[in-house]
Length: 139
Image (cartoon, rainbow, N blue to C red; front, side, top):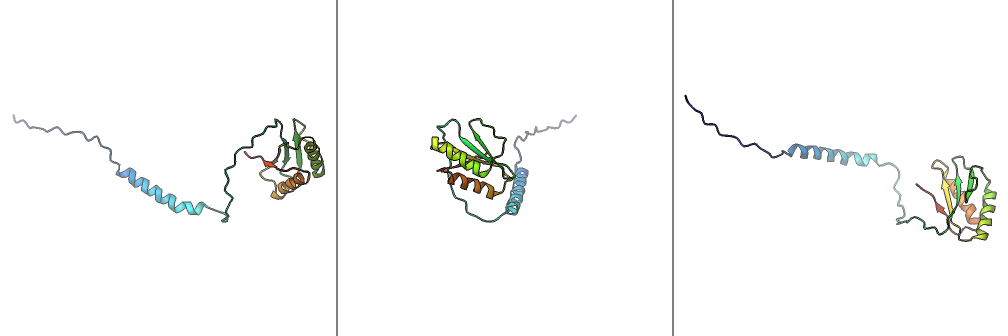
């Protein structure tokens, strides 16, 4: 009998990373080509700011809301906010509140689908009523 001597082969425990590098390169190229196509709109320069949330000493801010139809609602200290009010009534009530408490925090909540002009008109009403600063509520 002839014995063959077999050499035991060592197991290769290395991972071949070449296919992973190839896949990564293909994905990188795809993202580099498609990224400029996804950008839409016009070029504008927005102001840079590091806005912090408003720190309120007042427990109950006055919130004036604008719904998508442009109707105004006022919420002062748990008041009924479901009844729409006119622009003149908003100005009158804000003026009354600010005459008692001039440091009262005024916030504007606008529906995301409301016309931009409606929010600006509300801010003009508040400014005419004596509000020195108005905050915008966002999520």
